[in-house]
Amino acid sequence: MTLAPVATLPLLGMTEALPGFPGHRDYVLVTADGDGRLFWLQSMDPEGPRFLAIDPGMYFPDYAPVLPRAVCADLGLADPAEARLYCLLTVPPEGPAAATANLRAPIVVNPANWRATQVVLHDSSHPIRRPLRR
Image (cartoon, rainbow, N blue to C red; front, side, top):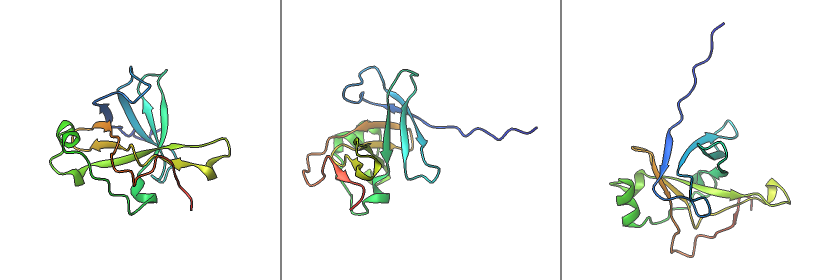
C-alpha cells in the first residue's frame, strides 16, 4: 500500500497575538473547502482557537487596503503588494448565508517568511461586517 505524501503547511508566526487570545501566536492556514475559497486559521495548540477566513480578493475584488508602513516593516515586506490578506468570518446563528467578513482588520501575511499580524485599518470605508452575499 502506498501512502499519499503529506502536504507541509507553513507555520504562521503572529508578531502579536490576536485580541482575546494572548497565549496563541503560532497558526496554520488550512483549506476548509477543498477549492481554496474558505480556510481555517488554526492554532497549533490543540486547545487553541480556530477561525474561519477567506482571501478577500476572491469575494471582494475592489478590496485594496493601504497597509501601514510600520506593519510592512515589522513583517519584512519590502512591497505591500506582496502581502497575502485573509479576513476572518462571522457565521451568525441564522447560518452560512448570513456570514460576514471583517474587512477592517485583515490578517496580513508575508509569504516569504510566514510572519503575520492582524491589522486594524484606520480607513472606515472597510466595514467590520461585510456580507459575503449581496
